[in-house]
Amino acid sequence: MRIAEERELDLVEVATQAKPPVCRIMDFGKYKYEMSKRDKEARKKQRIVNIKEVKFRPNIEDHDFQVKRRNAMRFLKDGDKVKVTLMFRGREIVHPQIGQKLLQRLAAELDAFALVERAPKLEGRNMIMILAPRPDQERRSSVAEDQDSPRGS
Image (tube, rainbow, N blue to C red; front, side, top):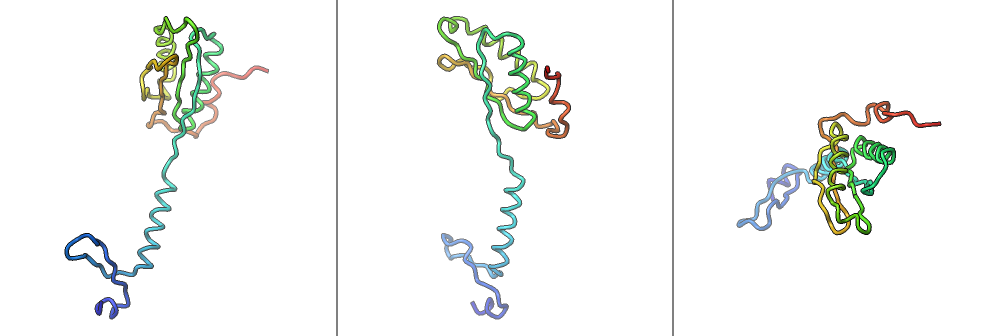
């Protein structure tokens, strides 16, 4: 206590559970300030990952498939994960291999942008696959890539 008072610093208890308790001489105000700056910097660098969902049906037409693929690609370029849900209705559930093939085709077409985080799996009447953006790819840099086909007028 005396040493801390002589140096005009604070005596801070670091480990209360230790026998004997561990204390440290420091400027506590400066320490709190540095900790808050460090926490603020860490929060600034962290990225919140959202999960976007794209829903399919087994008998989807080619143009509809391409539109949904483009939406999934846009989500991946924005850095979000994509949950691809294939919904079976009625007797479509008898042919899960059709859905499996459709989801594998989507994964193959988005291979340059996505990694399959969770392979296609049947859960009830839905087949679900999760795609995550590739970490090695530069995102948000070019908007021109997003427009791989012109939108009709």
